[in-house]
Image 1 (tube, chains in turn purple, cyan):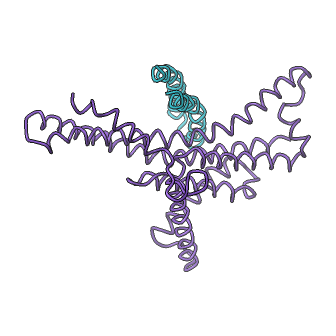
Image 2 (tube, helix red, strand yellow):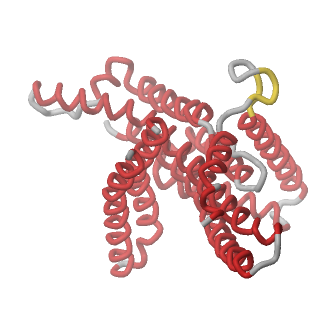
Image 3 (cartoon, rainbow over the protein chains, first blue to last red):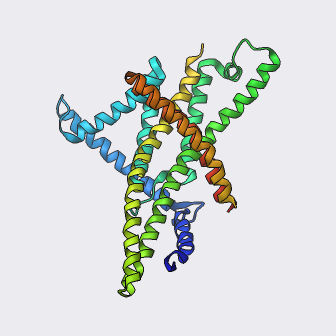
Length: 266
Length: 64
């Protein structure tokens, strides 16, 4: 097939487009396209939240689709992530958890609009987010038990000493693994999803090309295949919308679980 | 070659997520009232399993 032979080149171009490119300055000091779209997402989030606050203050009972919608999402973050995981201590951690959730959600949603990039599609941003979560739950643990107490509490009480040291080492390792998996999970889901979408978009355009150059039976057949690729693209796009919400949910939920792990044991 | 290795590695993650979904659906069928809590646990479990597959994805991209 002629169209398929052009795929590797187009794929390289696509992957190159997903690498960080500087818009202003260079990649060390400057603005890459991911950070640009992250700023767009932050601006959008600020607008939505301030308009929501203003509209909500207008009447005692929430009115209209917008206010009710935002309230529903906030309540979802409060009940499903905070109250059900953290129990009684939810009020203390709700601001942090809600901030994480809305930041990631808006970044992901901006990312699935065609032509935009998700702010979370680069490892730098997700690593920073994971570091925030990591530092937060360690700070909570240290605040509750003191530095030495927190270090000791990694391993459960009541084990024989050699066993306890072994468990402690494994727990320490898994604590640092959380940092990596949080960052890599979010990054990979957004990155891989967009690469897959881009691949099908490229396939659709490559198979449609012969029809533009001249009308023939083979060209018509390949254009028919292009419709098939577009259908798959639409399905993947819908899945990506789902993934965008679920990944924001998973990241926040895992942060809540890690906080709960240091909050709970007495 | 790396892509073949990634495909092999994903088999494990696929079995893991499949098992989690199997357990979640069967227990939801037995006890529909715990659906909300089960969904959270299921998402958590599959997130842990998925992380392994995704680490494989990154390693594949890095070595390619």
